[in-house]
Image (tube, rainbow, N blue to C red; front, side, top):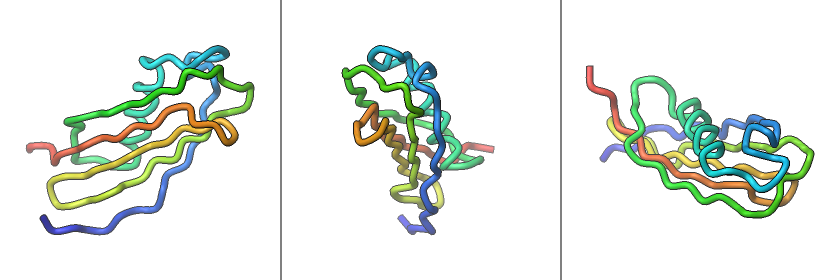
Length: 104
C-alpha cells in the first residue's frame, strides 16, 4: 500500500443540541455528526465502509462541542480517518472510519 499525503485536521463546532443535548449525547445523533465530519475530511471519491463510535455518558455542557477530524492514513484506494468531539476538556465521542475508493 503506497501512502500518500496526510492532511491537517479539520476543526468545526456544533451545538450540544445536534448531539442530543442538553442531557447525555445520543449515539444516533453522534454517528450522523461523525459521518459528516469524516466525509468532509476524507473528501470526494471515497465511500465509507466501516465506522466505530464510542459515546460518553456524561451530560453535555452549554458550550459548543469542538470536532477535530483527521486523516490517519491515506493510500490510493483506502483512507483511515478519525474524529474526536470535545466539550471543554471532556470527551463527548470518538469515531474511526474506513473509506475505500468509490467505483466509477
